[in-house]
Amino acid sequence: MNNNDIIRSLRYTFDLGDDQMIKLFKNGGRETTREEVSNWLKKEEDEDYKAIYDIDLAAFLNGFIIKHRGKQEGKDPVPEKRLNNNAIFRKIKIALLLKDEDILEMLDEVDFRFSKHELSAIFRKPTQSQYRDCKDQVLRYFLRGLQEKYRGD
Image (cartoon, rainbow, N blue to C red; front, side, top):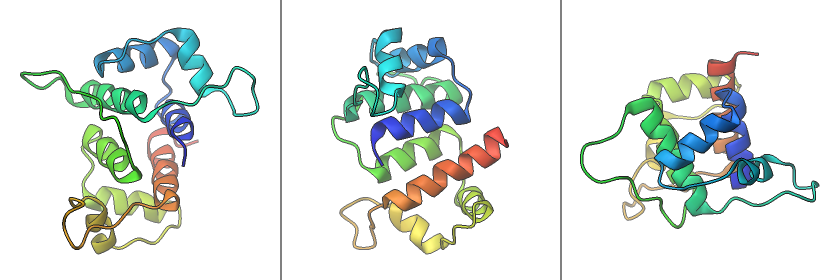
């Protein structure tokens, strides 16, 4: 999945307006403009479309965590320069206080079968032997499950 698809999906799922999006970026350590956010949300065919870089998506997700969990004491979160599907999945899980059972239930609701062992492998450190990369399909179904749970259209 590309970063623009992820940010579009989260915006739709949680019904985030431009001002809220800008605030999430700011809370995550990234100043942005309405135009910039608008260009990130456009489809690839649009001439004003701009790809959102990993560091910008990381700032947005850090702001998303702060919105839902509150700001931690001490230092501000620093957005990562590189993100993968595992990190994106983990940040969303943290922000929404999701337990493994909640995630498996959401995946089941969108007819995607996934075991608890497969899920725990995604959240392991990359240095552990049981670690597995989160494939685009898994992240896509997870985002769809979020939409079912939080948007319910």
